[in-house]
Image 1 (cartoon, rainbow over the protein chains, first blue to last red):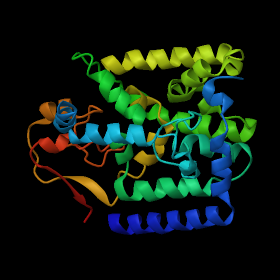
Image 2: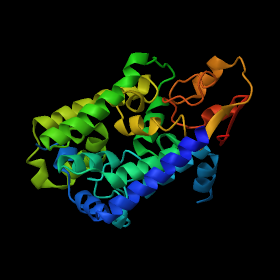
Image 3: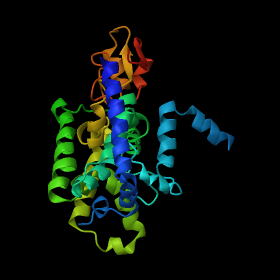
Image 4: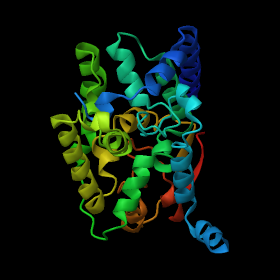
Length: 44
Length: 260
């Protein structure tokens, strides 16, 4: 049972990564991470 | 030089990984890797940061009304193999808590009901509020963020220093509160407040690699003292609270291996 759930999560995760790559999420993640997040620093 | 090498050799294997990953995750010249959300709590606003913070990225996507496919995929992939192991072996904020815990021998237990609050924080501050209010609410309160990004950025950047206000003070108070708590309890932030740990802990019961109890031994108390999150691992080796530090493998009747 445990192994079946593992394989299901693994395949679902790879599918999610593929969908994210298709939607160009990696570039959005990079763009967001490059700039200083004012919330993280503590500025309103 | 030889002395330094000898000192590094004498460190525990887990501390070596934590130390190396602290340097790697804040390597500055590798910032092109910010395209990858790494399942550790290391603020991406730090100029040195190598990776994107998965919690910050989830909030960003929800705030712009999109689903974070890549982050959920990465967390699922890592969680499916090792569960919460990155908390125990790679997370810089977890490493800080392990170091702070060494300052005092006296340890106070954390009430069990508090250990579920991280799920409330995940749902409210990371998912609901950013989606509804379009703001990064967990980041606004994150003590790891103020330690790894807030303080360094404020120190080196006079423009930003002039903009700090009440929120910065709130963040500092939360950070100081956790720093003091870290001395007297084991990994309080991981157990009470970490939303990343909350997500990864869901995979502990199904992950490919797991801790196995091969023989039940009456060494609960001695083994619990070794555990960085104060668990009785013999009772529940797949516990959602386990950070898979594997310090307990020194106890008899426990092993680390593939799920059968």
